Structure formats: structure tokens, C-alpha cells
Image 1 (cartoon, each protein chain N blue to C red):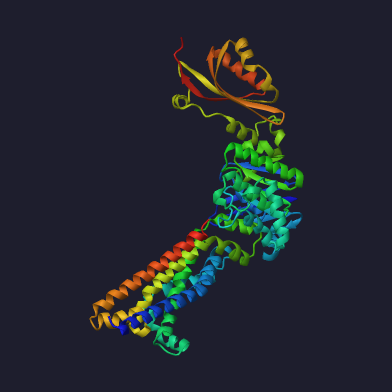
Image 2 (tube, rainbow over the protein chains, first blue to last red):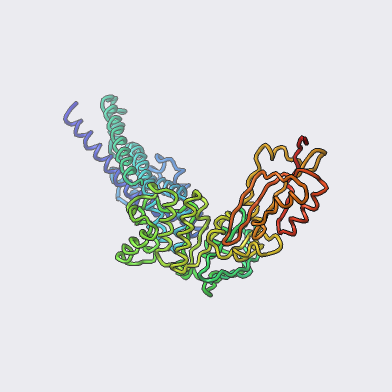
Length: 214
Length: 345
């Protein structure tokens, strides 16, 4: 394999990691509050209207296949990053696809918490904010880390799709060399790299879950 | 201290959990609410800190009408009470010390005060060596002790206990109840507890209310349970709870109506002085009855002894009515449980 190819593989891996990391970070940043509001508006400080709106938006967003979302929001992507091609442009749909996914995971985590600890918090006179910061999030921490891991793995998958519309990264490489130029070696290497990447993310996540579970 | 007035709760769907409850709980007392599951006791307890919002009526704590408070005022009102639960409700991801700190952090006390208080409380509940352990490493009794320490951390005026010992074994129950008693005596905290076990009422409560189907059917001092002449709700609950279960072979062969060669099986519930009188042997002599004791259980509340006997009444059937009259005179409640066939020799 040529030095050139090796460089391509390296930079593509870097691009994938960059896309996954940044969109995952943004998804957590927006998805955690969204999932929390989703739960709080249902169970702690009921606000049926807000809950209905958020829940249906999350469901609607989750029902759009990622490949469609990718193309459908191109005007919005252009508005945000100025272009619809490249790694940075891919981050917009990746993040938008991951936010509702992560938010729903977080909402489910809270629902699985023992209702008794929420009652205990209420009995202590906790404000909504204290309930979230001192009880909901700390008690769900291992679950949240697990949800981040699942989201990151999903984003590795999505990022390959983003590659098909010029997003860069390993998916883009595999399509251009492996598919369009019939270069089986590149195809196999990208697959191996993706597997390794997912394995690493998963074991890092599992390790963190173990540390935070008591 | 705590005053319910015409308090009702109807759940969406129409189930009436509480029906016009009028009740006053005095400052500094240990008040027990007993009833079967579904009687509404848990709902009533949760009205004291408004975890359940009543449908109508009012609840006053220290003169303050809780139902009219704003969200913020209610939070402050909740600062004055604390609650412990059947399943402890500790935070699994926090250590014992962090769990105890929680209520104080919610009330925004400074770190120094919190640290000092944690050590004090751990000493009180005898868990100083478990300070940095997680709840998963503790036994049920230890978890409840942590929950009690957490509840006491903000010096509440009222401690609400929701079946606090129902998940514990008898020895641990005894120890936890003693701890509650000690807290009540040394700190003067009003304790309201709900339970389905007369045992708990008997051990620590000054007064008790019996609940049935959303209503309080009886309220009385614990030691007065026996002083009433009629069989009140508390007394019948007590007699039912101390009655040993009939052995299966007997329960299966029990007939509801007498047959030719059958003898009655009766439950005698006696209390106070009657418990110390040699009733059985005397009547056996006087009436010529053979009274075969199948099962017995004797217990005491304070100075009052009470007990249950399950007996087989053999011998001259003509004497039975007299036996019943005798029992009544001696304040012994008799209940025929059924009849069993015997081979009379």
C-alpha cells in the first residue's frame, strides 16, 4: 500500500473521530437538558402542553431516516457552517440526528429510577433544579455514560453515511476507493478501523460505567 | 400540631382514598395509623407533607394551612418535616455521608455545619464506621438507620414513617423502633407512623387511629385498646393479628355447620385480668367440659396481658351455652371458627 493511501486512511480516521467526538459532545450538551425537561415536565412538575410538544418533536425527529435528514437539512447546514460539504458540515446533521436519540435515552433512564428517591427528594423540599442536579443526574450517571457510549457508536455509523454526501471520514474513503474504484484492500481496512473504533468507544464507556456504579 | 379537617382525596378515576378525615395529632407524640393495605393510611400520611394533594378539606401543620401555600412556601414548609420509607429510598450512587448530607444541602447549609452534623448523626444511629460506604454494602436495618440520620439532619419537628419497619426482620424492627422512641424522647419530635402491624403500634405508639376504607373508624390511646367494653376496631385487629394460623390439616377439615359427631373449635380472646384467672381449668371442672387447647398466643401491651386460645370443646354439648355465658362474664370474647368431626370414644 502506498504512503499516500496510508495518509488518506489516517486523515480519514482523524476526520471520523473528529465528527463523532464533536457531534456527540453537542448531542449531550443539548440532549441531556432536553431529556431532563422531557421527564420533569411529565413526572415532577407536570406541564402537559410542554411535554406534548417536546415528546412529539423528539418522536418526529427520530422517525426521519438519517440519510434523509442529512440531505433535507442542507439549507440549514449551509446557514450554520456556510457550506454543505466537508467534515464541519457533516457535524450539523449528525448532531441534529443524535440529540433526540440521546434525549429519549436520558428520559428512559430517569423513568427507570426508583420513584421512591424522587419522592424522598420532594419530601425534603428539593427545588426542581436541586432535584435534577442532586438526584436525577447523579443517580443516573452510570446510565448516562452508557447512553453516551451508545450514541457515540451510533454516530460512527451515521458518520459513514455523512461520508457519502461529501462529509469526509472513513465512510467517504470506503465509498470512493472501496466502492467506486473496486479497491477491496481499502474497503477491508476501513471496516477493520471502524470495528476497532467502536470497540474502543464501547470498552472506554464500559470502564467508566463500572467506575461510577456503586 | 397536625390537624386534618374534613380531608378527602378522590383519585382521578373515582377511587375515594380518604373520606372526610378529622384528626388532630399532638405535638411530641408518637401517633400510629394502622389499617390493611388500601385503607388509605399511606395517602393520609402523604397529605402531611402534601406529597398527595387532597381533593377537599384542609390540613394544618402548626396552624399553617398547607393546601393554600404557593410552590415556594410549600418547599419551606417541607423543610420542617422529614420522611422515612419502607424501602429506605437512599441514593445508590452516594455514600452514607453524602446521603445524610443531601437534605442539608437542599436547605443550603454550609459545608462545615454539614460535616459536623454527619458525624453527630452517625454516632446517634451507631454507624460511624460506615461513613464512606455505599448503600449496597449495608443491611436493611443499617439502610434504615442512614435514612433516619438523613431525616434528622435538618432537625425536623415532624418525622413521617411510611411502613418504616415492614421490610425488616423482627429483631431489626425492634431495634429501629427503639431508636425512634429514643429520638422522640430526646428531641421531642412528633412521629407519625403508618403500619399494618399491631406489633409496631404496641411497641412505641402513644395513640393510634384505625383506618378502614378511607375512614378513621377509631382513635384511642394505645393502652386503652382493652378498656373499652365493646370490641372496637383496634381490638379486633389486634385479636386477628395475634391469632395463630390454624394448622392446615385442621383448617381443611373445618365444617361451617355442626354435624352429628362434631365438636366446635373456638377462638377465645382474653385480656386484662381475665388472662391471669385460671378460666379454662375452672370451667372444665364446673361444666364438665374437656377443653383441648390447640394453639395459644399470649402477649402484653404495657401492663395489660392479652392472649388468644384456639380450643376444641369436647364433652357435654348441653353445657356449651353456659360456657359462652361464663366467658362473656369474664370479658373473654368467644368466636366459633367451625366444627370438626371426631371419633368419640
